Image 1: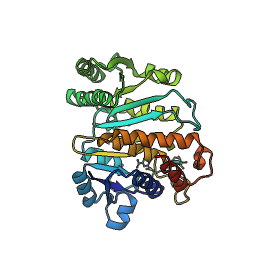
Image 2 (image 1 turned 90 degrees about the vertical axis):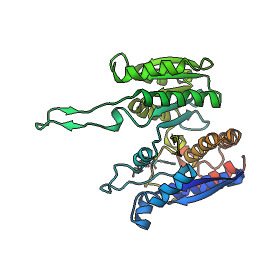
Image 3 (image 1 turned 180 degrees about the vertical axis):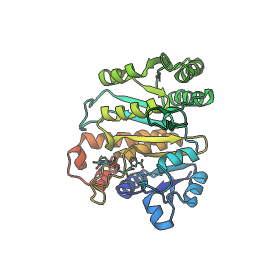
Image 4 (image 1 turned 90 degrees about the horizontal axis):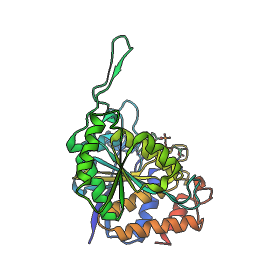
Amino acid sequence: MTQTITVIRGDGIGPEIMDATLHVLDTMQLGLQYEFADAGLVALEKHGELLPAATMDSIRKTRIALKSPLTTPVGEGFSSINVELRKRFDLYANVRPAKSFPNTKSRFPSGVDLITVRENTEGAYIGEGQSLSEDGETALLQQKVTRRGSERIVRYAFDMARRIGRKKVTVVHKANILKSTSGLFLKTARAVAAEYPDIECNEMIVDNTCMQLVMRPEQFDVIVTTNLFGDIISDLCAGLVGGLGLAPGANIGTDAAIFEAVHGTAPDIAGQGKANPCALLLGAAQMLDHIGQPEKAERLRAAIIATLEAKDSLTPDLGGSGTTMSFAKAIASRV
Ligand code: NAD
């Protein structure tokens, strides 16, 4: 069976890591068809728009996009194209795995294998109702958390845990202090958790979570939390396992899902063949899980791990002298 996906090659190192990723996916013969679409600086130059209607139509039609990083030029209408995509497609779940990999410059070369599920549409991070008093002395921000928003993200986390065989979900909150917003999130999470007796659920206050993540990250399996806490925690988790070159992310909604690397366009190394393609490849593995090909996703992850173990053609960020494409070919030879 073939499945069409929208492919956005992006800016900076984007085209290089996308070519490398598609090389590996093609080797796997997954039955994927690619519909190429532009976004970011390259779209602005080609079509006069950062997010052309044709790109939106393609994602609406295929419902699945694999996306390289994009440059949002300052003063071009959006504060971020990525945030705009999340808004337009109501991509409410931000899913970021963090896993220890061999031969990476990491404080935890083993033992970390967790997934942060972050609510993507509500809370303080959205920046609703921001104001500054005339004298510039007082700043205000509104925070909205809804039962619907909380329920759908917690349900997503539990359903995902069940689907991919995870055993425990930790609900991260600050309900002891933020009694209204975080309180509603926690109360809703408890009600949802009761419907999943097969998955262990525990609760943890966000400040303690940060300490626990640094001291004993192996105790976590799936973390579910609100937008701003998830923003901070998922970067902390990427740091635990060696940083940006290995951190993928998915933005998932009811009608569409976009899979990507967490890092940016890396203008300092663009066009030099030095970029590590692993983050986007791991994003592609998340995509395969999502479209119902979990065995293929596991095969892809195993090939990445085997290549890292063999130190075969690693890119300079991992201490090797390989190129983006030679690293991808080394991975492709193991899928
Ligand atoms: P960045 O992630 O692009 O780069 C930070 C550092 O990490 C750089 O030294 C870079 O060389 C390195 N790096 C990043 N990815 C790498 C990879 N795959 N392999 C090896 N090294 C890698 O962050 P930045 O410099 O803050 O941002 C650059 C641009 O990217 C900005 O225009 C920003 O808006 C954009 N950006 C886009 C996204 C996205 O589209 N998802 C996310 C973040 C930043």
